[in-house]
Amino acid sequence: MRWILLTGAAIAAAIPASAPAATGFYGVQTLASLRDCGGAGPTDECAGGRLRRPFATAGGLWQASAASGYVETRDIAQNGSFGEGRGELAGDGLNLPILHAVSSAATDARVNGSALGFASYNFTGAAPQQFSLKSTLTVDASNASPDNPLLPGGAFVSFYVGIFETGAFVRDYVDFSDRSINIGPVLDCGTDGLLAFGSAQPAAVGGAFNVSATTQSCAGGPLFLQPGHSYVVYGNLSMFTNRGGYLDALHTLTTELDPALGEQAIAELRSSLVSSVPEPAEWAMMIGGFGLLGGLARARRYRPLISLS
Image (cartoon, rainbow, N blue to C red; front, side, top):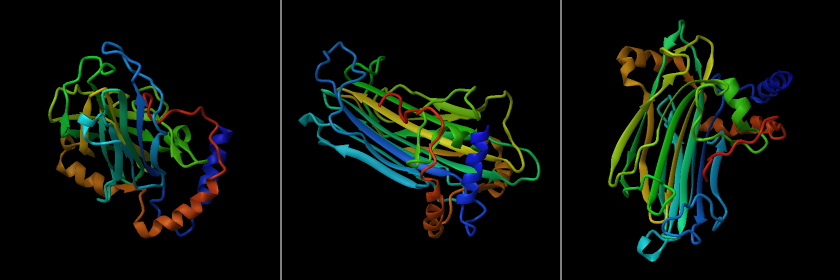
């Protein structure tokens, strides 16, 4: 607890006096990887394999957009692979994450394209208000994956949206020493500070498809935001392909206020949720102040961004 209090004080001290009241925490981070499966036979799984090149990463804490990837060749007939992760925070006031990824593996490779985004929000409503989110994934193209995506032709996609208490999320998953977000792709109820989540791992059946997930409260029943409290919305998209598999979701994973809440509730939430993402002109001032935290390391175990990278 002492560490938490000291960290909170340091964070408060680092915020410039002229920063907007909405100042808080947000970030977008992306990753792409390419591994060698040349030693695996046609009936063998490929879950590891040496990296053919270093991880391609971009973004981090206080970055509102990021993109990373690599291209060997987009012509799979030439035995090439490509992967990419892209993300941004929507510039619509709420600034919920918009995530994109593409993953296509040559016949001797395994590829990952992944992206995550998060932002904190202060709830300024006068009374508790019901809150839920809906995420929708649009896959533009895919192959029909075998049941085991670690086999040749494998294509696995996973997406997740979670609602956290801001203090717990920042304490557990934000590394101020390098401004990175270190978090697994899927977290279940019982995770510190997690209030609600929705996720899906749809089968790649070939062609284009859409799938949605809505957050469900970890306490049972609906989740209610409490006046004066701060919350984080976190989204993750991960796409893995294996030896000939491909997935294209560059258009896109989007998150929105759950339409089931009704138009009036959505309008009230839009006016009472204050996003942490500042106007672009304020970014430089914020980053300068937050730079004071560069030497503050978390007393937490490192958690990988993507568990199967």
